[in-house]
Each structure stands twice: as structure tokens, then as C-alpha cells.
Image (cartoon, rainbow over all chains, first blue to last red; front, side, top):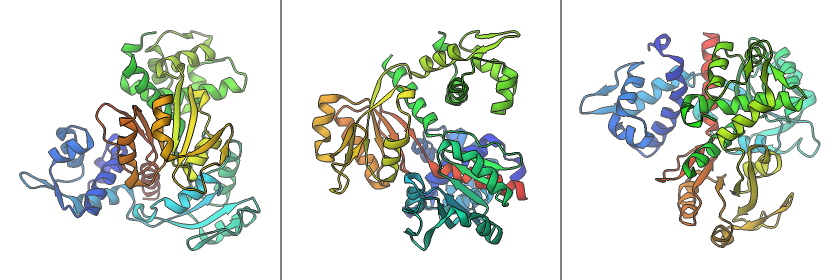
Length: 209
Length: 209
């Protein structure tokens, strides 16, 4: 694997390849040409060849790409072949949606704890996990060392909670609030839904106009 | 406004500027230098000057940017100064979270309808809106012409529902399912949460390694 030679812009496109290729694999398809993938993903075949050539030549002229080999390579590059553990803080609607519907395991992530402050949420069961009180967070983190904290909290509570968790040893944050997490040395990914809505509005304005 | 000269890559960065500048404005701040904005947003001051110069010279040497003027220009470019109406289909956890917590109006979007198929969700109240039965969708769309359908549905129902709504005249879709919507002529934005989680895992793998 030529991991170090893969550029950041290719990396940011890999989850999308992963998504399309997983769906093909789930449908029992084993090979695909860059041309077919191109028409599905609506990017040029030459862009696809360029992207995928960055980490090895799985495409064979006339045979297309081996989907399983490609998926496994993408997983390795993205670190989805590791086991990362995660906890969710804030079991409101977003936290519940994630606990119920998100396919974490497919991405190498294992939910090990759910936390909330509110009495009507503590004790609720999601699969094998029961929502615990946030009072137990410190003990839990020091004993179980979760890799990722998923923060589905109100805007104003997000940064203080991230700081607290960082002090308990959590180094990566997946943030759903419309605010930034600013901690030196932490890994942060934000799901800023509003940004996506604005791009949709842009598209509407420029289609109409 | 030099709308046509703004490149797609700048457009895709504008919602993030909008987010930061809105937060400054809410805190009562009226001016900011590219240097201050640079340290907040963690992008270079020269990139910021380059991006914002695309649509007019609001930065004045020594005075910084006028935040309100910049916000208003960004809103115009992104089409957030228009009035777009939206309906939500699927009032599960994600649909509820959006109806309750999303600041639509700030982005020029007005929720006008909520729909679900399930009897235990129909009739529930969110602010001024009551969840209606999906049976009423066709009549509602033909009478009210919503600009945007927000789809928070299971994966397999998403594409068929989008097609149906398109036939009722809805031309823009904001999709929360981990699948693609493929309709020629429609505007589509996806919130693919899993992609963001994978980028976080990449960051963790490459920090540890």
C-alpha cells in the first residue's frame, strides 16, 4: 500500500468510492470498469483511474476493477480496518438516530457507550447498550479508553464537553452541533448540515435564474 | 455582485464563511481582519482574501471586513436571500431533529409541511406544523409547490419517494439516507454522515501511525 503518496484531496473522495463500491458488493457484483463506475458516480473515468491508481493498479485493461480488493484497500487507507471504539454524548434525536441506524461496524467503529444528562433518557436501551448518566463519563473513559466521542449536544455545550473528554483521554470528536471544536492535537470532523442545505439553495437559485 | 465569476470551489467554501461570520455577527462584532478570520477558521489569510475578493472588495486595508456586508453578499450568492419552501418526509429521529432544531429561516428556507406514514407520528405537533399523512403529499405539493423535499427515510424508500415527488413538481432534494438520488434535472444534496466518520477514522489512523 502506497499510503503516503495518496494526496489529501484523493483521501477526501475515498469515502464516496467506498459507499458506491460497498453497494455494488452487497448486490453481489465482483468487477466494475472505470466507465461503469464513472456513469454511476458522475465523475469522469479518467478521474477515477487517476484516483485509484494512487494506491495500486487493481484495474486491468478489459477486466475492470476487482471490487473486493479495492474495498479492502480503501478500508486500509482510511483506517476502517482497525477497531475504533466510540461513545455517544447526547441521546436526543440525532444521538438516537445514530445509535439505531448508523452502520458503524462497516466502518470499523464499535459503539461501547451512550450518555445523557436527562433522567428520561438514562436507562433506555439501544441494542446491547443502555444509556448511562453523564456523571459516569470520567470513570468510563478512564477504564475503557474510547477512541471517538460523538457529540450530539446543543451548540453551547459542545466545546466544553469536548475539552472535558479530551482531559479524560478522548482524542477524536465527531461533532453534530453547528459550532466548531477547537482543541490542539484532537482529531475533529463536523457534520455541518446547514452548509449542505445552503449549497442546495445555491443550486436552486442558479437553476431558476 | 459578480456572481458568474465565482468558481464552484469558492462556492463550496462559502457556507463555512457564512457560519463563522454569522457567529461573529451574533456576538455583536462588526468588523474582522483577514488575519483574525484566518486564525479562527484555520485557513491562510491569503486564501481568505482570494476567496472574498471573488465577489467584491469589502476588505479595506487596516479596517478589515465589514461583517454584515459580507454576510449579505454571501447570502445573495448562495440564494439564501430568497424564500425557499421545504417539506420533510419521514418524521423519525432525523426528521424530528431537523424540525425541532434546525435554523432554516437563517438560510432562507421555510418549513411548510411534515409528512409520515406511521399512525403514531401523524398528528404530532412541531411548532406551527402538524405531521400529515403521506397520503396527502400529492394534493399538498400540487397546491403549495414546495421548493425542497427533505428526505429522512430508509435507504430503499428514498429514490422511489424522490421520483414520486419530482412527478408532483418538487425539483430539489436534501437527502439523509446513505444512498444516492438519481433524477435528471433535479438538484440534490446529500448528508452522507458515514463519509465524515470515515475521514475521522483516517485522521485517527494517521495520527497514531
